[in-house]
Image (cartoon, rainbow, N blue to C red):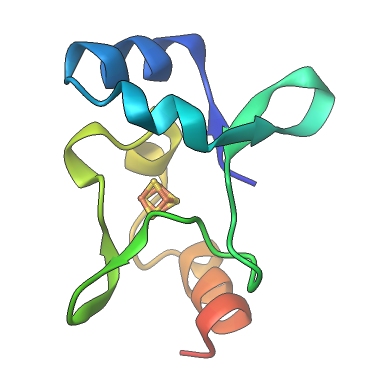
Length: 84
Ligand code: SF4
């Protein structure tokens, strides 16, 4: 579950990506979150030919930028969602 904050929503709008708000779903504890695919991955994961890239990288939620690339949590998430 990838939380989306009010600040993220403002950033989407300022970047001309108000469409992203349509892909928000209820998250934990009354928060909002990114919609997920049937395999549990974020709907914005993957670009043509680049399955591990974020398709909204420039405006991704702040928590995504805070997530340490290559950390054990990152590797565990990749294993559990995409098997790599
Ligand atoms: S970095 Fe991009 S693909 Fe990954 S969870 Fe965040 S928005 Fe989704």
